Length: 124
Image 1 (cartoon, helix red, strand yellow):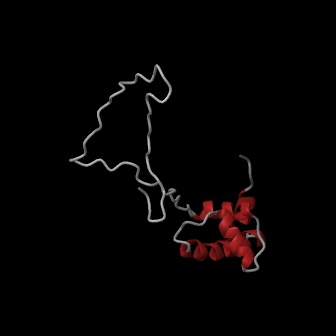
Image 2 (image 1 turned 180 degrees about the horizontal axis):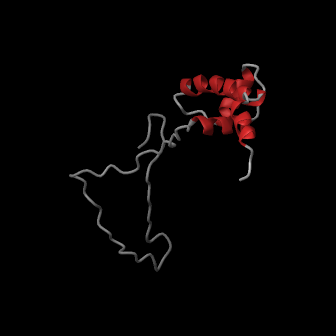
Image 3 (image 1 turned 60 degrees about the horizontal axis):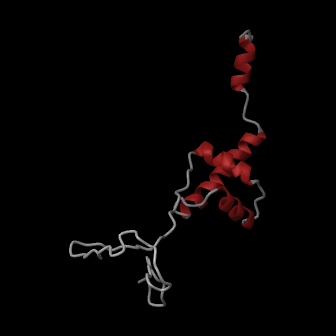
């Protein structure tokens, strides 16, 4: 690259622009909200909480600033009920049909698989 030495040093000494300073201020505003959420809020929630505080910004800008600051939200897994509780004393039911589901008459063979049932008291 053919750049004059004086141009390079002038560029190095130049102060940050207003946009860069606004970004730095915005990062400082995002970080406490992110940490208060136990690092679970993403750019959408952070943008919404900033908007509630009266700060107008875009989700894209919040996302960009989060990436620059290394703020990666945790992904919380959705809860799924435990469907099987096989222990040491678990007796396995015998396979009486042995995959032969053909029947000569209706209502001769019934097959059911109840993995879990939700009740008022909890999961069965």
